[in-house]
Length: 77
Image 1 (cartoon, rainbow, N blue to C red):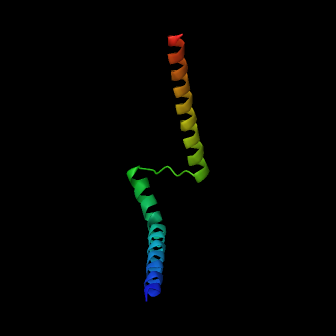
Image 2: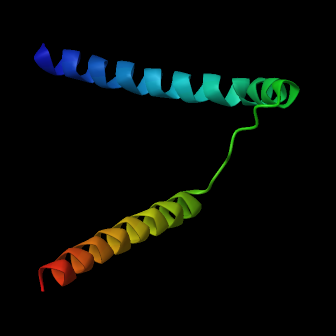
Image 3: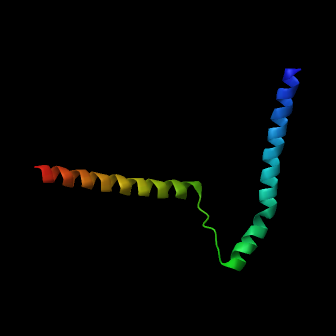
Protein backbone atom coordinates (compact mmCIF):
# COMPACT_ATOMS: atom_id res chain seq x y z
CA UNK A 1 0.00 0.00 0.00
CA UNK A 2 2.89 2.38 0.79
CA UNK A 3 4.25 2.03 -2.75
CA UNK A 4 0.98 3.38 -4.12
CA UNK A 5 1.22 6.48 -1.94
CA UNK A 6 4.80 7.08 -3.05
CA UNK A 7 3.70 6.85 -6.67
CA UNK A 8 0.79 9.21 -6.01
CA UNK A 9 3.10 11.79 -4.38
CA UNK A 10 5.51 11.53 -7.30
CA UNK A 11 2.80 12.18 -9.86
CA UNK A 12 1.26 14.96 -7.75
CA UNK A 13 4.64 16.77 -7.58
CA UNK A 14 5.20 16.25 -11.27
CA UNK A 15 1.75 17.61 -12.06
CA UNK A 16 2.43 20.68 -9.91
CA UNK A 17 5.69 21.40 -11.70
CA UNK A 18 4.08 21.04 -15.12
CA UNK A 19 1.19 23.25 -14.05
CA UNK A 20 3.57 25.97 -12.82
CA UNK A 21 5.55 25.85 -16.07
CA UNK A 22 2.37 26.03 -18.13
CA UNK A 23 0.98 28.99 -16.20
CA UNK A 24 4.32 30.80 -16.44
CA UNK A 25 4.43 30.16 -20.18
CA UNK A 26 0.87 31.37 -20.69
CA UNK A 27 1.34 34.54 -18.64
CA UNK A 28 4.74 35.47 -20.07
CA UNK A 29 3.32 37.60 -22.92
CA UNK A 30 0.99 39.39 -20.50
CA UNK A 31 3.88 40.12 -18.14
CA UNK A 32 5.98 41.41 -21.02
CA UNK A 33 3.21 43.79 -22.15
CA UNK A 34 2.68 45.05 -18.59
CA UNK A 35 6.39 45.67 -18.12
CA UNK A 36 6.57 47.56 -21.41
CA UNK A 37 3.53 49.66 -20.47
CA UNK A 38 4.89 50.54 -17.02
CA UNK A 39 8.46 51.01 -18.22
CA UNK A 40 9.87 48.28 -16.00
CA UNK A 41 11.77 46.18 -18.46
CA UNK A 42 13.16 42.98 -17.05
CA UNK A 43 16.78 42.28 -17.80
CA UNK A 44 16.89 38.90 -19.47
CA UNK A 45 20.30 37.28 -19.30
CA UNK A 46 21.28 33.89 -20.55
CA UNK A 47 22.81 31.42 -18.15
CA UNK A 48 26.24 32.07 -19.65
CA UNK A 49 25.88 35.86 -19.27
CA UNK A 50 24.82 35.48 -15.61
CA UNK A 51 27.79 33.20 -15.00
CA UNK A 52 30.20 35.66 -16.63
CA UNK A 53 28.79 38.56 -14.60
CA UNK A 54 29.17 36.61 -11.38
CA UNK A 55 32.72 35.63 -12.34
CA UNK A 56 33.64 39.27 -13.02
CA UNK A 57 32.29 40.44 -9.66
CA UNK A 58 34.08 37.60 -7.88
CA UNK A 59 37.35 38.46 -9.62
CA UNK A 60 36.96 42.12 -8.66
CA UNK A 61 36.22 41.27 -5.04
CA UNK A 62 39.19 38.92 -4.89
CA UNK A 63 41.51 41.50 -6.42
CA UNK A 64 40.30 44.15 -3.95
CA UNK A 65 40.94 41.79 -1.03
CA UNK A 66 44.41 40.99 -2.34
CA UNK A 67 45.26 44.71 -2.65
CA UNK A 68 44.06 45.30 0.88
CA UNK A 69 46.19 42.46 2.24
CA UNK A 70 49.25 43.75 0.35
CA UNK A 71 48.74 47.28 1.70
CA UNK A 72 48.39 45.94 5.21
CA UNK A 73 51.57 43.88 4.83
CA UNK A 74 53.51 46.88 3.48
CA UNK A 75 52.47 48.97 6.47
CA UNK A 76 53.87 46.35 8.81
CA UNK A 77 57.20 46.25 7.04
